[in-house]
Image (cartoon, rainbow, N blue to C red):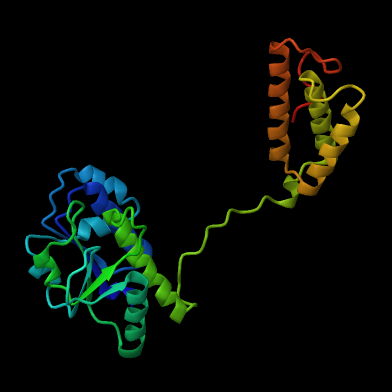
Length: 268
C-alpha cells in the first residue's frame, strides 16, 4: 500500500539530506524518491547517508520540472510549516490515518509527498500544485524540521497507520542476539577464582579491611549469583579486579593479602 506514495524533494541543497531521505523511504516502505532540480554537488555524502538504501538513491530520477515529477498523480501532499489563507491544513498523523483509511476502503491512489529545500521550504508556486497541505507538529521555538527528518516522520506515521489496520503486516522487528548456551555459564571453580580475585582487589585499594572483606565479598557473591554470570563476564570482572590491583600498587596503597603477581588463582 505505502508503495503508492512517492517522495519528491524540490531543490535539495545538501547531499546528506538526499541520501538520508532515500534511507527513510526504504525504512518505511514508501514507493520511491524523486529529486527535482537538486543543487548539491557532493555525491559521496549522499551515498554515505543513504547507507543500506543506495539503490533507492541510484534509481531516483533527477528532473528539471516539478510538473514532470508530479506527472498524473491525483494527490500531491505538500509538507510546510507556513499557513496560507483559504487552504486546509492538517497535522501529519491525522493525514496519515485518513490516507490509510481511504486506501483500505477504496484502494490506494498514487500520491506525491512533496518537500521543499532546506532553506526556504516549498515556494508559493510549488504549493499551488498541492491538493493537500500537511504540517508536522513541533515546539514553537523551532517549528521547522531537518528535511530528511521530515521525510522519515512522514513515512513513519504512514507506516504506523498502516499497521493499525493490519497488525500482521510484515514489519521490521527488533533484532535479537543469540543468547549464550547454558554451557557458557561460569562454573563453580571459575566463580571461586573470581571472588578470590575481587577480595584481593578490594584490599588493594582500601575498599574493604581485613576484618570486613569476607562479609563484603559474600554480598558480591550473592549479587552475582542472581545474575548467573557467563564465563566471558567472569573474565571481564577479573580483568577489572586486576586493574584495581595495579592502580592500588601505583598509588602505593599496598595489598595486605594478595600475591605480588596481582592474581590469586589460575587463569583460563
